[in-house]
Image 1 (cartoon, each protein chain N blue to C red):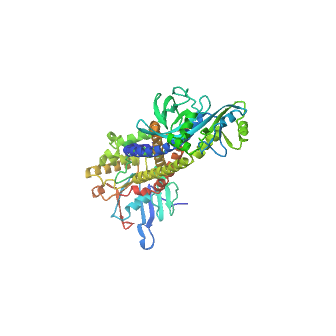
Image 2: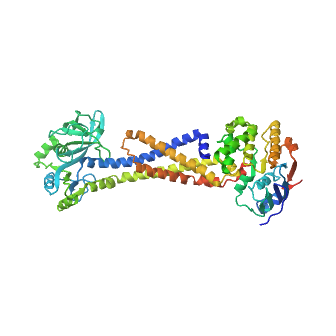
Length: 232
Length: 377
């Protein structure tokens, strides 16, 4: 099937709608959302609770199927009124990195293995996976904590390890859900600087959902959602 | 990177406690199998120690272990004359209970004719019976020592020899004495009873009764041919060694076999339920991690592998530790426990299958976990 044509963007959504339930219980989480994010861009997704931010992030992350519209990720038409790729798991593995509000590191793996796991899943040889994981951890300035278990990391350290994990497979798209919510102002600033640096160096598109007023000024652009509609 | 192993190492204390419980449970299953094999070994111990090719018993019976068999003592002479029989001996079997050295003992008294089949084949201490009366050979399980004296009926016997492995199907140790002593012990009346019988003019009853005649056959003559000759006497039945063993293993311990089988089945089901509950609980505790794994691109196969490997590791370690515990303690059990590699192999296979089945519920929950759960606050 021929999808819509998008130019110079890593994330392109056109008229994406998503509703949950039917009849009286129907909730329109997204209404004809159209947006695009280019390589190297860091954009913020703002909006009150229930405005559809998480649903939008889940749609872009290929976790939730929209009801209509078109979606193009890294030059590939992924959705055009139906999923066009069957193997969405592989798509997530190859193209998308996720950063969570509460880091979501696996508690039974140390910092290095949490990062190496993504590469292991992608089929990297063990030694290569560990080498790249350690390089990333060093790059994110938590090399001294490379053998620490997540329970022994501070909030900032854990978030940096989580970012390392998100970057491990060199994804072109990074989706962050409240990446600084659990951090103080100083550490939030450090994380945002880091994301901007990564976006620039790796030419990745970053979308971060946030409520955090202290980092709003650090985005290239802001998308605001209200009642499932994009305001700007 | 083995996620199952890493998770178990992370929660080692929890897994160790689980292993311990499972080991004890599976140890009981292994013990049941061992007791069953021990019962068979015990049931066969006496006929094996007597080492007869043919058992001649009362006609129409499966005696002397499965049911009562009584024949005149002269039957032995009759049997001994049959072509092909090298040696024959008359035997009696009688359970007795005695109090000795402050403890109550249940014994099986075997009466035999020294120098003929029916007595113990191997002695581990002392000597064989050389006198006609008041000597006996005891199995070591009785706890007797050579030179011990014990009262049986109205007489005192001296232990002159010890043997090993002579027990009944109910694991009671055997003592051997001369046929004459055994018949006296079984049939002689006490003096007041004898005087009363004499006073009322009753004739003294013939006490030359035996329970079976055991025979050894010439290696050049087929056992079945000799058995066919014996069967011509309608008042006698004859059993080969194999038939006697079949009766003992199938008839005599049949109920015990069913009971043990039932216990093993119930315990296996209980083990399965426990493993299933543990695996289910562990999986429910990991739903967020499973969601994260799915979100970052782990396949269902990876997640199922995590659950199945943990279940298998739990079952295998539990089985190994349980078996090792039983192995180290088996000689302290009140009944003989015989662990056979075939039984252990079958049980191991059952444990593996049970572990795989037990993961079904947890796997079902895990594959249904929505990756979006990882993003939820």
